[in-house]
Length: 248
Image 1: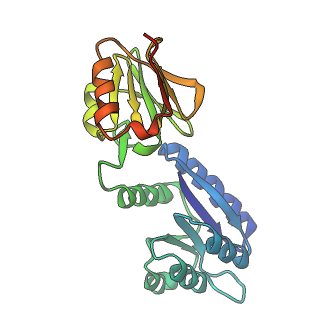
Image 2: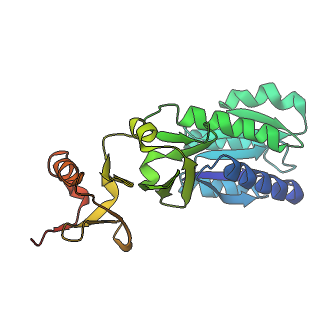
């Protein structure tokens, strides 16, 4: 989950940017949230000081004692890795903004097309290593691998069950498996499980439970049982399993 913080002294502009961002998250299937949206620079500084965030979007001209550039300087000292994006109606600020290792610069009024372009580049920069995420729907939907609990085949569709929501795609396990790291194991003809999410296994009923939730489970097929148990026993993954119920 990516955490965004936004600050603009104009409440109307702030509300509009919130809606655009949320639309962009949905359009790109991005697991992200706005954790703070404020017109007060002090609130932003205080939040970043006590919380880790991924992206900060700042209006440069805040009509306050501090500017967005001042805030960026403070934020950059606090966190060298946070992504900073500026918004402003004053084009002359563009070159100055990049002094603060700015990721992007959005001129006002911000359009959804321009914002989507920024989000796409942001994701590519964050998750440029193909081992960190899975791309769906011709690369438009991006899912972080560590957020996937299990993957289910349902007819022509493949459903990705993640920590926050489900994603559907028309694909095949043959195409998906090469994108996944070693902790993902096919345990059934219709299921691929993230072994790091397993908290209990009932061998008698061929059931796998995830995240300590008895309602959240997938199944083990006879053809895949030995492979799954070999990974759990010898693949340095058993620490995630609270118990294995094997009552033969």
